[in-house]
Length: 146
Image (tube, rainbow, N blue to C red):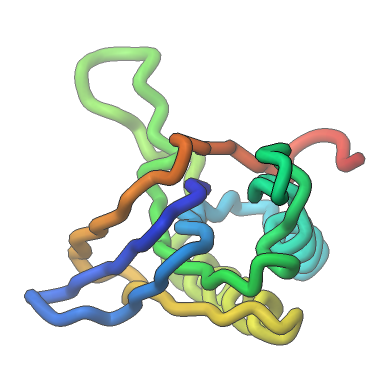
């Protein structure tokens, strides 16, 4: 995810989602992801303190800021480039389940009170954003949750 001053996604030249200050979330789904991971991830992202307070310290969350979230499905996050010259996407979830998880993530995030915009699952998308900071973080449900 990236903290942004603005972001939008276009499909066939038309804007499908657009936000001002907030977070652009590139969401990759693993085969083992389910409802627990969706809820954990949505709550983590909405409440992670990565926006600056009046003293310039990262002390405010997306919920505190009232910013938007642009969610873009991105299976290429699971690209394994260790062998050969072409990435392998064998670690990514299949599209049927991934779409369900993607849509559920949007639903849960919206349910938390976040203004959510999105791309279109499996569409060829162009994402335009202005990274703020820059602040870019990887959040993974694999492994321990603290």
